[in-house]
Length: 302
Image (cartoon, rainbow, N blue to C red; front, side, top):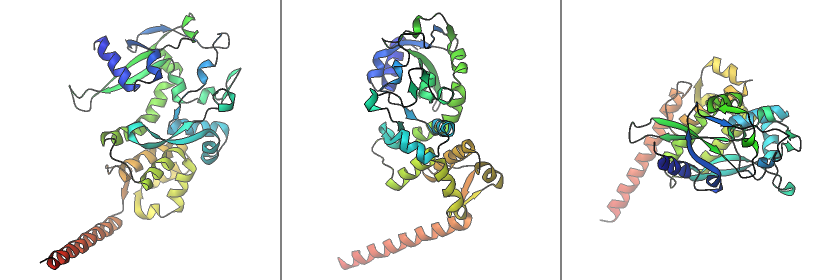
């Protein structure tokens, strides 16, 4: 891929925002090398932890709220605010910065990050950016990944002698784990994006999406304390697992949304046959009622 093409793709991915100004337009592969180290000894320590637009992934929220010993409700009220994400118009949670403290991240002190081992994926990638491109001109659905560096003027970490490859950096930051955990959520975003910006989900569907992807306790209650299991067939083994395991519940939620909102088949969840038959009959009945109404209107015009 030519350098100019890489620049254009990176610019498109970053939507020509401020971040595009600090992207080094050099394509990196997994064995590409760079120097970087962030520690209290560098003069810019924690300066990059201010005024950031950090979208929290579902796995970020699970890790952070469990680290802090909070329920999802409490975590979302204290540290996040909902917003509609770009052209997908899907609701996501954005980390609230402390405006009264110069836009500082709520988890950062002069001594560093208080939740470092459970910090969001956005923080883990830095300073290595990841781009995923669909190669439609070659094979439909095939994706190509490449990496690039984000170099901010104030960052002195690049002057440190510690050397990394992209792979060794990602392994050190647990990026691959977070990528695996976030992959199905990203696929949901891509599904919605493929519908186009003009296709809006109904408010009820947006509320469902936000609840399932941000609030494990509420979603668990929805499954076990509503008529959910009267509507859907879920294997007993799965039910036992999601009863106590937040990560398993999160992954089940992705399957549920894929099925309930986007109409995709799932091996994990399916609508009960009696419920499906009843729904089909109701649809047929409504259509027949509408057909008769139209026929009556047509006869009245003659």
